[in-house]
Length: 181
Image 1 (cartoon, rainbow, N blue to C red):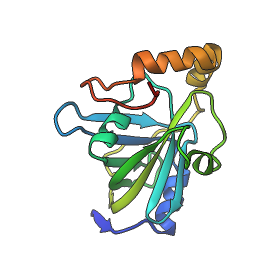
Image 2: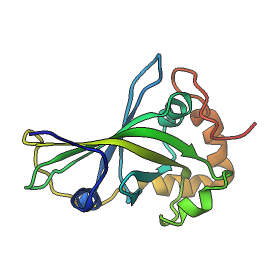
Image 3: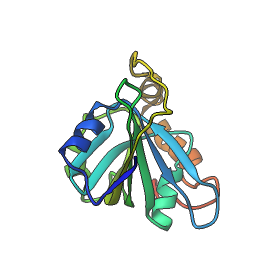
Image 4: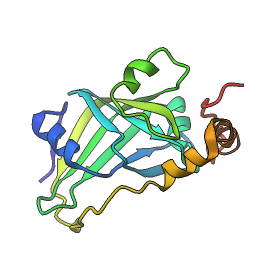
């Protein structure tokens, strides 16, 4: 039932484009594994070997710390519609900050969103599909705006302070390098 590929193809990039939610997984060499749901139209396929997502402010910043430490990442999509499928992207990830030279070029793939803090790029090493027969069907109602509303209400200075207070190190004490200094 499961199949392995070395890269994405048109069918798989089409599947990704239809999904409203995806999950990112990272882990430090020692410490807690992190698994996070993502949404709000923040994912892009750059080519058959490279994907990226616009990372928004959250209660933590585990993926950033883990990627800085070892680069390992898995991104998973699963269909909640009538046609089941699970898609996993395995590879090496890296974090691009607003201060980095690549930021502007990568950001051009996204609509600007309140609370955008970094961009994650994944260089795909392998791709796996599996059946997804056990995943329930759900209907999409709408995106939540609560996170963006909260970031707008905070404003840039308070948002940066939040990053210093809550997103500067992982729960295992690893640096995220989100904010300089």
